[in-house]
Image (cartoon, rainbow, N blue to C red; front, side):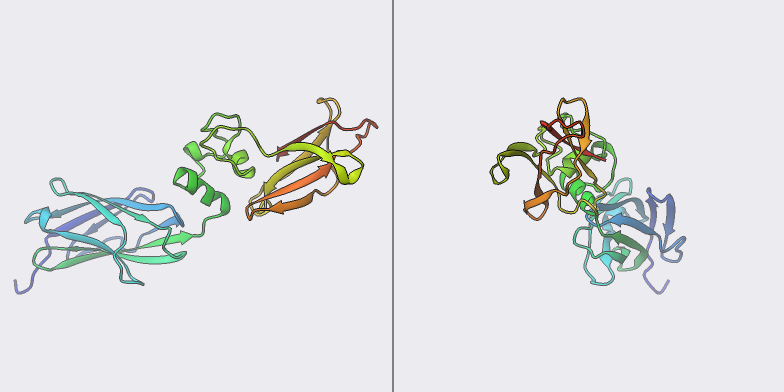
Length: 254
């Protein structure tokens, strides 16, 4: 044999897609798989590698084709050939990110597996989940309907009212005060997300005179200010359809 020959066999199993790749120095089957991810989520796959002269002499790296930079980290077990690759996608651009997995034996011969990371931008709620739960997925403790801190507010409400889903507390930012500029009438002060429309949130503002019958406010709330994420708003307490003055206020999410 007049050239170095790589004796490494890589078997890559992309668990989320059910694709299996077998790679040798002369054969690549099912080349070009892709993983679809939300920017900021961790990309990962499990693999196995084998070299007839011993796994410890094999170097493995993942290279981003556009930049030429090594990306991700490997956890490897040379005794059984198990390999885990993980990559933080928060610094990678959205769109298609071509990557090559390169295994090189001690003689310098290499085998290459090409794949792509398809990265989509994270929505506001996905970024919020990543911040608190480490993943954009609407599942497990990050499920919209879950209440991991046990305070009676699910994650959707915590997101809607700018709260920490891991710290108990049911204060959604609502209060009542005298409106000195309007003959001493009472007004409700409350908050909502500035991006509530694009986030698919619908806040319903309701008033009651007896805590039994509730009527939706028909006046557009006045914006008092915002911090870039949350808005502070106000509504005067209206007269109920029964002619009774309203005395109680609440906010519902729909």
